Length: 183
Image (cartoon, rainbow, N blue to C red; front, side):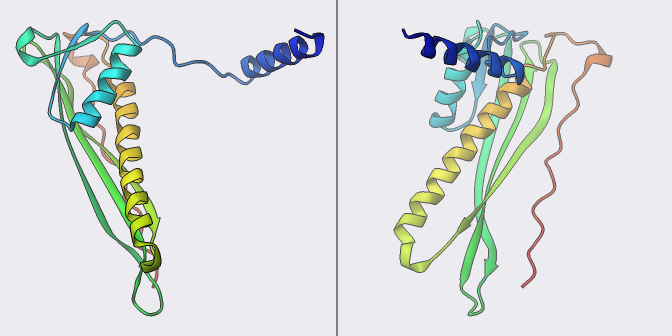
């Protein structure tokens, strides 16, 4: 390697460490065997890859004596966000909700029922119906993956399988929806 490339690599590493950049690293979950109930196969696959790839926790079936059980249910929707002067839809709002809760093997509530609510805006044109349909599917998949990433960060908050009453985790309320734009 030339001296210039070594120097540029060293400067790049120094800049990244100076700005606080840090790789995600290894998660240390309180549970080592997790069963997941509900969810779509695509979401379950992503969740399994993220949990098993970033920790020593394994995903098992509910019948295989898990330490904790994660219950999931998701839903998506689409509503009109704005109309143009002719009354034709100009934008849609795409919504995705992931409801979840976690209980210990003995029934202890580790994470009370909570919801991750995400939304995206989609511009629309009748000229590009097929392309906009594909874009909507991509946005829904992106929201689903974003919800899984948020969920894994929420799972890391569980510190004990038998929390004291003072350590109980509160549920997380969804954020307020987008305001309706003026017509």
